[in-house]
Length: 268
Image (cartoon, rainbow, N blue to C red; front, side, top):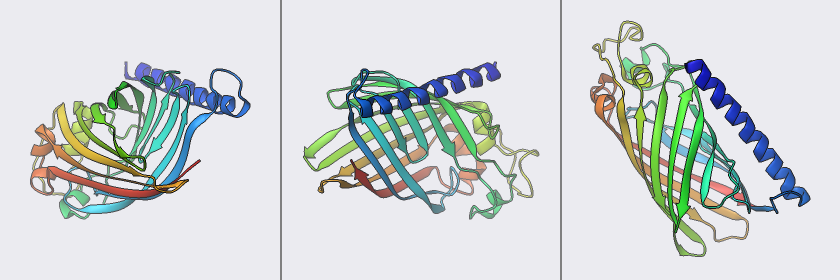
């Protein structure tokens, strides 16, 4: 069953990438249903994140942005660790493949007990997303599963936000999201057993599926110059259920997680 899901996700993603490439060609030639890109942007910066999910120690990581939005409503959007491609030629509704990266957890983390546990490899997660935008309200749902054998789990994320434009140069977007994780994901990142303890002395803990977290965030887009803009944001994530109760979090870390990032982007 899981192999069938992975194959389906891979096919959807390949179709999405092909569709985005065709949209780009159409925007250059003027042929087909797309009549030019409404916006393209590329940028880079830094983000401060916990050095593992549930940690109270933080590390800096690169923050990347690439966006290509077309008049048809289709878009290619790379932000931070996630790539999304909208296949629908519609400015209000969107549906398409998503691919995202999850950093490994190894002996580089600051906490001595967690660093001595068995390493969790880098995860590549693929799936689908969909949603709608109406009167500056944006609602989306995303389903991804691990296609790299790092945690063999899956996650569902529901999110909503409001696009507020107080001036021509400034856009603010408060968002709220919640993520459900299955037992494979939870046990990999929050469980403790003889199989993953390593030389750590943390007590056994079985992490079950459930609502993993809720996150409130604010994204800021400041565009006072013709081509250059600043993109920043801050988020607060609260771990819930077994994620919060795990000894990796309850004893060694914190169930309150902060994320802060900023980047410069060129729009053309």
